[in-house]
Image (tube, rainbow, N blue to C red; front, side, top):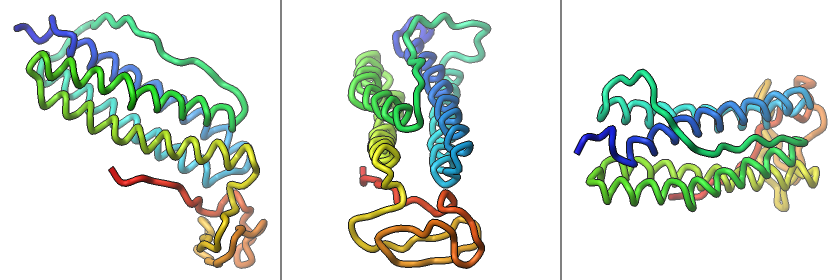
Length: 196
């Protein structure tokens, strides 16, 4: 079967486009976080944006491996275009990641397997695992930003200044670093990650 006539071929192109767009959307939220003085949040968002860009690279390289270079691939798909406050944007991102790991990539993996491309199916499944963790992180960040608890925990944790490395164990991070004077937005965040 000609790979360019398979649904997997188009699903790889859709996935490439979607991951590129997700990376850009998260860069835009990071820009807003930076403007709000939430440097550590912006850094976390840029890391996730980098993850998305690398997912796009994986899908691009896989498509080219199987189909070679292409001048034009027509893709008919819907992509999210929503915005709001930082908290709202984080919730939108969580919902987008949920859709990817619960619906889109499992469907693409099933189709790839049915078409005889087990290795491509595994790539979709592995990316889905990462997207599940992204959803967890975005939901946590949404709640923390919404509730004003980004720098507070129920139990004492080690807070680290992202500028000078000063460390302190407490339930809340300082407002201003006692060593270098950096604002609270520079304090490293405690992000939830689940093992896969």
